[in-house]
Image: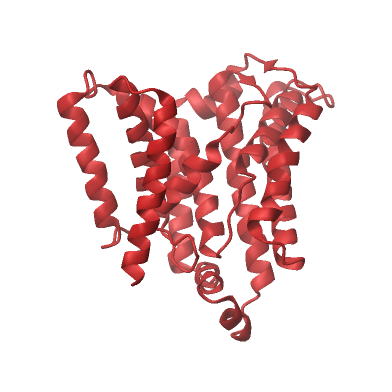
Length: 314
């Protein structure tokens, strides 16, 4: 699934790894590897949906707010606060299914605004970006929900063959989305809509349906990421879940080689881009650079990625 477009991204990732092996103390440890992998999972999972949306020429600013909604809703279900559950395992299953379903519904709302009312994607998703976190805060009265449910937390801290379970979730989503984008009719339709919407419509592609589906996928991915975040923290804070993740995800997609104007997308590139974003942040922090400076560096990476894309298209 790697192509020539990934060579530059892969070279940047290798250069960062070599720099850290030489200059960053205690980099070559299993603990460092585990920390970076678990922190990048959420960005990649949300990035899978964002890549689909950007491939159609859109953007989704509401991913962090949808994470907050899903993360705020789930604990109230498996703790039996909304309705009685027969036992803990049924409650956990219902919490996962219902939270992801609600996240997909909010994604459908975004897609409905974009496809049926032709609202600009940045405006359509800005509505939920603002209102979504408010919904989560009102739903929880702004309270921090602390819980200790190891059975639910396994989706984040559990391990299979020594690898965190959330890493397996991330890999499964990446492989499924990469296959769908490259090998299915739906994937071709997504790229066709992003490449030339009018031509796609004349060719008989159901443009509205394709757009609604990619926003639903983005919502579902955000819901999964929200559940992983609260499982890692043993708490759900509607004020902080997914806060600012939009910048990380868009940066990962752009650095990975997906055209921000649509028509060309790479899920594997998004995975590599997210690894670069995470490694840049770790490198700066490990070498004493304040976290605020990392925001400037990430903005610089987006500018560089867009410039390289323009050079590639020229």
